[in-house]
Image 1 (cartoon, rainbow, N blue to C red):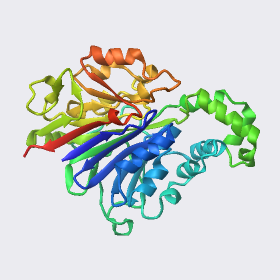
Image 2: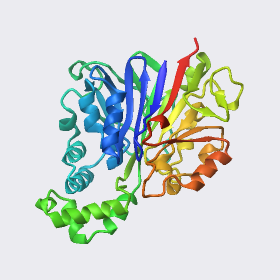
Image 3: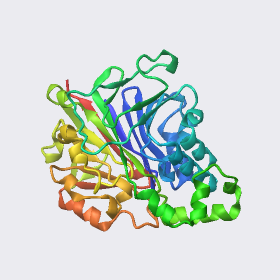
Image 4: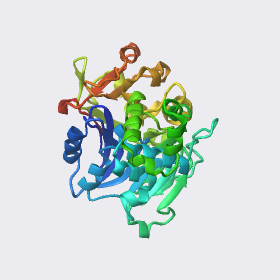
Length: 376
């Protein structure tokens, strides 16, 4: 059985999947850190192991709770991140130092040191235009659930191409497919608001990070661009392989009620195509620029749940992703956020395509859970 959970952390992102005894996490952060800490502590125990932590990008609201996750669980075995070049790491880590977030600066600058020697760091290379995921021919990077020293075929530090399917040991019929897309205009918006001298300071290791006036300037600028200065976003498909579709139908239900119906497998409604149990996690990706239906073409008919990117921002959404079928559309959003998220137009477009927007706020009862069971 698989339990997929969209955790109630408000303006942030914290999603997890439990595959029997194996745990997968996609992002772990919130603008409301005090409430988010409680959610993390109630989601996992000291006996739990995170088999794979996927980090979509390094914005504060997507990573601010990773330190808490690390101290809550027994261990984090594998971390999958978008590949960053050295100059990008220096810029981002200096921004976090200016914000007073030294732990996050360490996460960006040296993830090996942050997580420790027992954790593998797997970096996903930037997607090159016109590439396509080929489910029939691609080599699977099998994440072995053992200590790093005993791993066969994958080193502690590893680079993989975008579109490489990742499987958990003994679960070859379910794949995780990361895809690293680079948006060159995002850091430009942030840097354009700074003076050239300030940019030079951020792009090198500098003692100016300790200057209070400089730090205040960085904080104000960071808030103006909604904290979104990362050029990379790691999309993630989590679901069955196309071959698996015909062999093992799935049973599916959620903890939510829609239009008076409980989505159990016995309900005769369009949402319950038994093989559509996959999820597309989008982080803060821009669906206008990233053609996810083309990238995940061979998997698209298996997707039922699409995490709406960037807290329902109008500028990150495009309605054509909903044209092929009906979808559950969870949106992580703070109830009193200052950005106007989610856009009313986005909500309207989701509804007009007969799909369901699902608000996941900081309220505990807004948690969204999907249960998936193979019907052997």
